[in-house]
Length: 298
Image 1 (cartoon, rainbow, N blue to C red):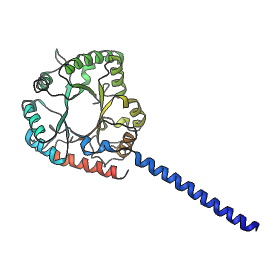
Image 2: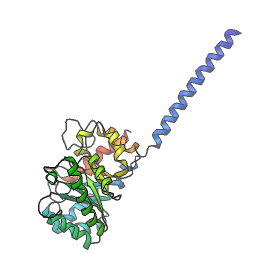
Image 3: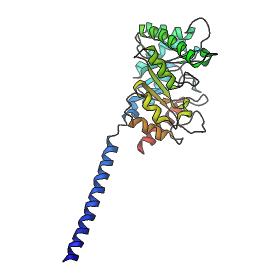
Image 4: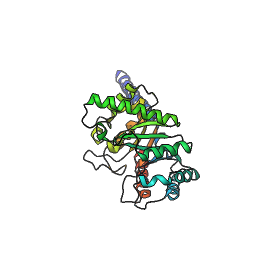
């Protein structure tokens, strides 16, 4: 009888352990299912680094059709001086193809008597005259801070950002700080600029391809950036490079993309076409496929 009871007890214990393991497994699955990966859906993806990075040198109409064919609903406008005269045509073509102009690019080179060079001024005029409300992704050339100590760089950046933000607000647009290397490209410095300026409307655009030195610390950095973060432009990531790599061809972007989704980030995700010697449609499509493959494995 004792042996029989012992047998029953052992059997019950095994069942209890199995049940506990099953419950733990169910909880884990439930947690996985609750992770929101909708930031990687097509409706939330922004095509970026497109206009100057196209071996076929498409015009506005061809470019808008290409973006629509790929399924993009959002587009950030990167340009060179030769592209600006057709900007009004670009806006019209995008609208006709169901693509939103989400952002435009400003590069502040610090040369001359004014913050905005003629190209940036022309773009600002277009945005105003065409009644376009979008984000303006802005970065400083490191020459803007040449010869200054960090504290002096901070003071100069704050004053410049205040002046630029005023111009942007006057036409109904939003100023974003874009990491492009050097002192200004450090998100910690950008956050300090935002906080010292007292401008609560300014946010950050973070680029994987300008952040190889931050790959290992990305989870900690993301926690700090998150309240300010507007857009993350993604890229294949390897510690040894290259700078531009197809999404899915690296060894770190999968982890970084998962960390981003788990953080609760709800902003835009940029897909870049940053290769000058290829058809940008092929480059964008390759990155889209790489992203889809990564997400399917989560």
